[in-house]
Each structure stands twice: as C-alpha cells, then as structure tokens.
Length: 265
Image: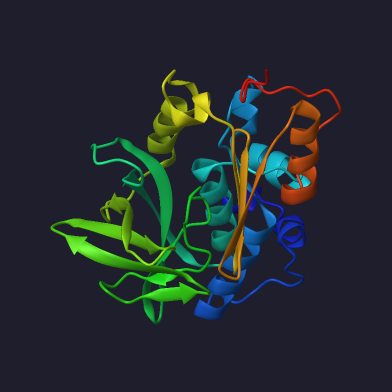
C-alpha cells in the first residue's frame, strides 16, 4: 500500500515540507496537517461517481485533484502515508454512535498506531467533532485542542471515543481492537455510498477541521465555530453553494455543477 503513494506529493498537499520521523511528534504533526488541509466530504456520491479505495485512486482525487473524502478514503490515504514513513499501523472499524441510540453497523474506519510511548488512536476521517490530534489508547486520558476535548472509555471489550465540544461528554463511536482488512472496508464503503437511507446518500456533508476552528456544511446550513463563537449561514442557491465549497473548504467545481442534494426551490 505505502509503495503506491507519492509521499512527496502527499506531504506537499498537507503543507508538510519534509518527511517526519515515526515518532509521537511526527504523528501529531501529520494528523493536524491532514485534518486542516483535506476536507471531509461526500460530494462524489451526490454526483453519481463511485467511491474508490485503492491508493492510486485516492492519490488522484485527494492529493492531485485537491478534493476531500469520507472516512474510508481519508484513513486509507493516511495509513499509506504513515506506513511510507515507517509507522506501525493497524486498521480498525467502529460503530458510529453520534446522533443515535441504535446499534449501527461498523461503517467507520480508524487507525491504531503503535509507538514507543504506547498505542495511539489516529482518525483523520470522522465527519463530526472528531479528533484533530491522535490520542493515547488509554481510558480516561483527555486530549484538548482549544475548547474541544476527546477521551476514551472502556465498555467491556469495546473502546468508546467521546467528544466534548459544548460542555458535555458524548459518545462518538465504539470499536474493538480486532484488525480489519481492505476487503472489510470495501463492504462498508459500498453500504455507506449506495444504501438508499445512508446519510451520505441523502445529504450533502462537508467539513474542514483546523486545530481551533471547524467549518461544517450540511445541505444548505453552514456553521463555522471558532474561539467559542459560532456563525451560521444559509446557502441561497446552487451558485452560492459552489462559492462556499471553494471559499470555505477549498473545493473547486466547474460553474454549473449540480449535486443531487440539497434541493433548492
């Protein structure tokens, strides 16, 4: 996987000028830079395009075409970069809990990175209040970036990632340490991108996460949070949407591009 990646092009894409050592500092720098540079987005689904998870396709889309992607795309690419830099990486799968009390399938990909300091969770592809820095795979140790915190708790054999963006701790997703393989994520990717009731089929979702700022677009509602303040904007029409995608998220599409969602009256 790592040998298929143009590491120099990837590092340029995320704004890291030089390869970093396989260390905790190196992992944190890569994680932070990736989240800030490559938006979370599901726009190809709404354009009727397939979501491909092989590294050459991901490099063509997320690196060369300067697009974004969702968890399977983001974390597959990030894993390839980490392995090219000689990090020890294991792919894991999670059940998303954010926004529901129902048991969901394992449709989220995340990474375990083993370092001399211990094991760390790395996840550059969670399209909500996900981490912008890796966090130790240890119960109760909180990681804060600005006003947003993350921690892990145990629930039997499961680990639960919790986030705190508004004063309360909420479950984001739950996972075990069972290694998963590319074929497992192909199944999850197919379900997520084609199931008629999948939120990624029914909604336009874009997010960009800087260390202390988040911009979140869901259909016509844009929210930008920074320094404890939040601003909301309603997208007026298809042309305005293209301007928001370009100006806020760095995602340029040709004039006249129309997505299946959202609907404009």
